View 1 (cartoon, rainbow, N blue to C red):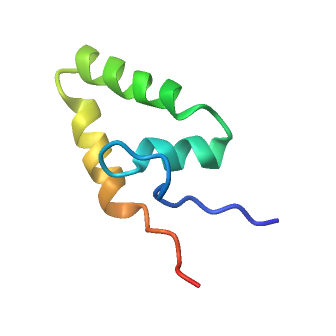
View 2 (cartoon, rainbow, N blue to C red):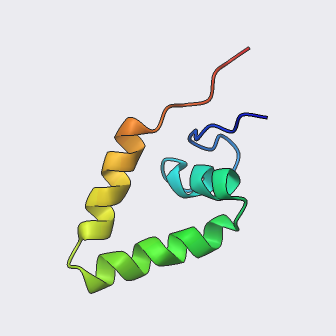
Length: 64
């Protein structure tokens, strides 16, 4: 089966990026959220920029 990365419709706090990454990699989205927070704190805001870019380029799931 072909897996594709989409924003999560069910597990989202802001935009669904971490939930979508969690679904794609089959990892708990909470771990991805923690990584984003750590990246943001360690790199003076780069995590926020990366999140916003991902939110802009990752597509929403198709509606059937």
